[in-house]
Each structure stands twice: as structure tokens, then as C-alpha cells.
Amino acid sequence: MVSASSKTFLNGNPEAYMLKKRLIPKLQMKVSRFGSKTRMVLVTTIQFDEIIEIGDPVSQAKIYEAQVADELIFLDLDASSENRDTLIEVVKRSAEEIFMPFTVGGGVRSVEDFRKLLSCGADKVSINTAAVEMPDLINEASEIFGKQCVVVSIDYRMNREGKYRVYTRGGNVETNYDPVLWAGECEERGAGEILLTSIDRDGTRTGLDLDMTWQVAQVITVPLITSGGCGLASHFVEGFIEGNADAVSAGTYFCFKDENPMQTRSQIKNAGVPIRLHT
Amino acid sequence: MRMVGIIDYGMGNLMSVQHALNFLGAEVKVCENPGSLSDIDRIVLPGVGAFGDCIKNLRQMGFVEPLGDMVMRDGVPILGICLGMQVMARRSFEGGEHEGLGWIDGDVIRIRPEDTSLRVPHIGWNEVHYDSESPLFARLPDICDFYFVHSYFVHCNDPGDVEATCYYGGTITAAIRKKNVFATQFHPEKSQDYGLRILENFLKWEP
Image 1 (cartoon, rainbow over the protein chains, first blue to last red):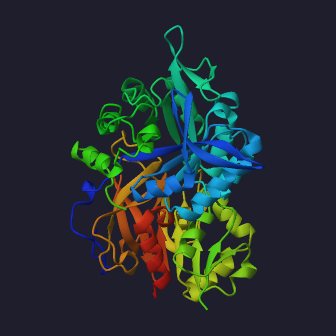
Image 2 (cartoon, rainbow over the protein chains, first blue to last red):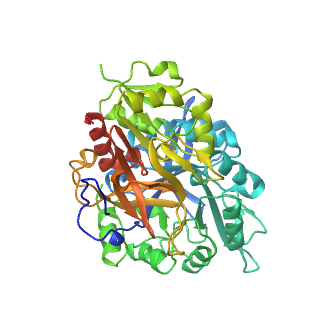
């Protein structure tokens, strides 16, 4: 930096400075009723099915923040409009208590839903079923709020004919969309980021679907978050290096306390992946 | 009494920056119209969204002139964040050509990484290279990461206005400082401890 001013930049070649790969804990939630009151509880899932309750989402978010999580994703698995206020409550509490970026999704169906979640403190909003059923919502939200806050979440699995298909409604409804082509269309419509999840790998801890991750990474130019299947630190490394993902999200992996996220980060860094180690 | 005013002009997430400033013990007021600017002595101009809407809202709500007087004439310290930084520039090329506030001599241009495999928007934590004398980056480690999410950035015509840079297939202006104007392309309110340090430095800053 040649300048007439007296500013002195620190030593080092700025070109060596780089964007870090991101680890994103996914906090999946369901509504729990206590008498007349409802609240969101944190759950974990296996292949979108077996559900285990594990605690309070915001308390867990604070733990993740202390463990240098790069971002968080909150997903309301019930995705029903009557529980919107319960989800809003979690968003508001999170915005008050954590100073890091977070995405909120589950049952978002309109520009108004986007507006409400963003104004309560969410940085990004993810849409899944609504993106497939009303794809113009991607364009509209992107134009109004900016593409950086529109995340399209794509859940996919292999169907009975052995073809990969996008599924909606929490993995229950098969569509005719091919995940790679759909990812490309989402970007064209204004998605700022794609969150790709393999339903078959979800909660299995057997490793990410590297082939599909790589294929989607090839067709899009916006960042790709891949998820489904992380059980070891090496799975994250594979996702970054072989899958060419910009971020890896995991629910089950981070939920169980025998995994130390700091150790995971060191292992990923030691494998040559640029990653943050300090807050 | 000290009072920080956050300008609410309908452009995105004020909650996070408000909570972060409250957390640091600042008295914070959300200013929804120019009349509410009178008792503040420090300004935060946040912003998320498109440049065109941003400047249009500031104009329609009557903020441009009073803010200009406070910042350019009276020397009130201001912190612009993300789009709130970009709107301080002379003009932007995001979705056409728009005139900005003109407090900083620079243009807002799209990130075009030389390496086309790099993705845009630039989202995530990137290392920031800062002026070692900067009062706003005081008490930070030599290398620290901040959270970015943007597709455009301010290209300064006077390199002396650049307070910090990051690298993303090319040098990107990460922060600017000129007299009482400070602005960051990254989100300090979302950058955990280091981000809070920046906000704390801004609250203490006597330009």
C-alpha cells in the first residue's frame, strides 16, 4: 500500500491472507409443549427420522459460540405457521446473546416471513419446500433483502429408480428435480448460498456425499454448504478438499459431547485447510 | 450524557448491532427519523441489502442533510457497517449507477476475483490486514479474522483513507478511516470477541 498518509500496515504478504472454510453447527428444533406453553427444543435426527431431544437451542448456541463455530443454522423441523412465534422467540434470544452470524429456516413461505425473521436478528433465512413450490420467492426475497441473506436448502436422496432427487416437506415428498440442476436454477434466481443435505447420510456419521457435493460445487458460483454424514474430523476435511465445499454443516456430530470442536478444528487445520482457531 | 444513535432507515438488521453495543455498556438509541438525531453524539449506520434502496430510503426519510451536517461539519464520530460503509462513497455501480453520500472519495464496485473459482458473494471469516497505528484496531492480535458477507466493496481513490484490507482474489477494502468517519465492510457485531473489541474502540474513539 503506497500512500501519502502515515498509515503502516502490518508485515506480511496480504495475498497470503485468506478466506477461511467454515464449520457450521446445525441446531434442529421441534416444538415442545408444557401445559399451555410452547417452546423450541433442540433435537438430533437420523435420516430425517428418529428424533432425540437434547436441550435448549440458545444455550447450545452459546456453547458453540465459545467453541469458535463460524456460523449457526437454526432449523424448525415442525415448520408450521402456528408455531412461528415460538421460533421468533429463539431468534430474538439468539440475537441478544450471541455475536455471530446465524441462519434461520423451517416453514418460511413468504416475503413477510423473511422480513420478520431478518428484523428479529437473523442474518440469513433458508427456504426449502417453498423454494420448490414457489420458486419466484427466491427471486423476490433476493431482490428485496439482497441475495446474501437468501439460502436455498436442498435435501436430496436416491429414489427407487436409483436417481438422485430433491425432496421437500422434511424429506417426505419426492420431486422431479435433480439436485445439481436445481442448485443451478436456485443460483440463477438469486440464491446467495446453497445448503446441500444428503438425507441418506443424515445422522449416520459415515461421511459426506463427496460426489454430489463436488458436482454441485462445479455448477454454482455462490458459496456451497454441504451436510449430512459427518462423524469424524476427516469427513470435514474431505468435504472441503474433495467436495470443494466452502462450508460444512453438521448437527449430530456437534451435539454429542465426546467430540471436542477445538480438536476437530486443529485436525482440519493440520490437514492443510484454512480454518479459524480463535475468536 | 453519551448516546449512540443507530440509524434505522429500513435497511436490515439493527438488532444485532444494538445488542452488541448494549452488551458493551453503551447508551443506545434507534433513530427512526431525523428529529431523533438531536441528542446523540456518536452515530452507527448499519445496512444490509441493495445500494439503490439504501440511498433512496436515506433521502426519502430526510436523513441525508442532517447526517451530512453532523458528520462533515460538526465532526460527530460515525461507524458505517457493510452497506452503511458503501453508501458513504461517491457512487456505486451496483445495479446501475447510483450517487452515494460522497463522504469518502471512492466508488463501490463488484468483487471480481482474478481466480474465477472464488465464489461471490464473499461470505465468511477472512483475515484482516490493518494499519498498526489504528485506534480502531487497537488491542487486537496482529492477525485476526472478521466476518464478511458482500458482493461489492469501496474502492478508495485516496489510499490514505484505507484503514484495513483483506484479500479475496484481489485486495478488498475492509475498513476506511477519514477524520471522524470510520467504516467496516465486515460485520463487527457478528465477529465475536474481535468484533466487540472494534465496537468498544469506536465507543472510546476521539478523532
